[in-house]
Length: 304
Image 1: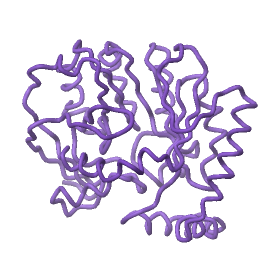
Image 2: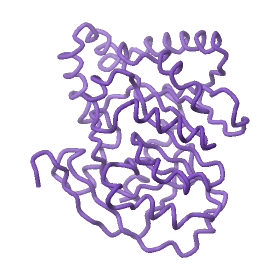
Image 3: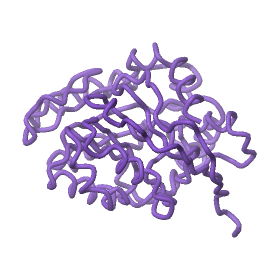
Image 4: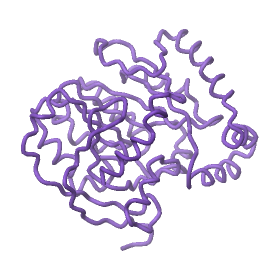
């Protein structure tokens, strides 16, 4: 194994589909444990302590093997969310095809699927994905600055994500741009909304939350690379000052009104016509995730 390469190993699990407490799904689907995108701000990094791995988050990937689903029809009408604590289209998916295998097992069962990714490998499975009713694919994009992106993750470039999003949109699949996490003073939310408004149906906004082991990593990065922003970051992440988010919220209400987009809070509507303008959804401090935080932790552990 070359230095810097992730440790890959197979693991056998009883099921790859677990009951979900997320507000947007009935079931969570995570074909892998870990994620080689190695995002510095990854909220799922807490998963490491349940895996037995000593490598840093991003330095390992367990490839799940599960028994073939015998009665996929039981998921008819249910919402299945792919990628709550991994990226189902990490680079290794090109070799192991675990996400593709599951999609083929579920094909024609009537399940509704949502896929979250930072990859364009998902293009490989476009024909399968669009065979599902009301399928949706979302891409996480929190900057148009490729240098900053490279500092934060090892996923594909922003332009490749945007191109994949547009391809799915033109193919008739509902798409979401997940502007997350929003880095105060760095993420240009208005510019991103303007860039994606003609190729997606939902634009989700989520603030940068810093907790656990990655908090000092991000704070050290800001101090080194954006020292002028350190007073702001100290106010937000050490003193609990939320005024930045309140001001951003007010600014975005005005901005979206001016460009003719609906701006809502804690809403996720799939009922609009396909060709309708996107809805901008503000998930800053959304209470649903707060209430289910402990349940989500249990869910993530059960997914191992």
